[in-house]
Length: 195
Image (cartoon, rainbow, N blue to C red; front, side, top):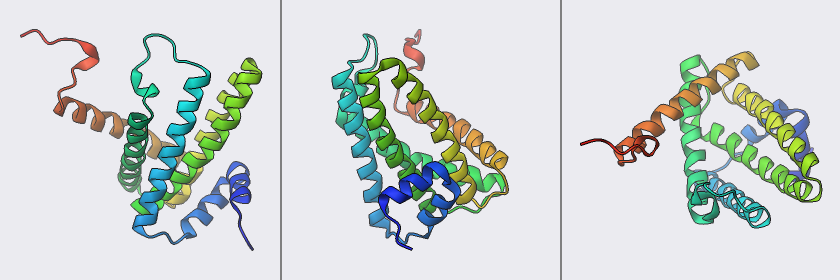
């Protein structure tokens, strides 16, 4: 059976476990895997930049979102960090996923989200209320796909175990980012220390 990008996209939306199994069967070299991380981050930065051009950010939002290069670096770094933390969290819960496999799954999910965001961008410009509802539905669908991808990637028994892995990943990323930001000297919430 020949699998096309379009059929894999549709399978991801309808049967994410089946899509995850196919993605895990792909034999990518390490360089191909990291190039796919960069491609996914570049496409995400492109669609985010386009959305900001069409709908400018409200005053007070960080300039980070309007700088495509900075946003690209954050998305690429976030994918790498997410892959590592998902691997560690899943193993802690009893999963058996490998870093490369989880990164493959996260990259594919990111690419699927870019396509969904592009459609949502068109929809929000044409019909803002419908676009907002579509955005909510896309977020919930993405969470469901992510749970299934984590379940398959770690060979877990249930979506409940995958949810526990995601919770542990969320906590781990908050702690890791907090430590990283404190090491590079970012003050907490803009509060200037009294010295």
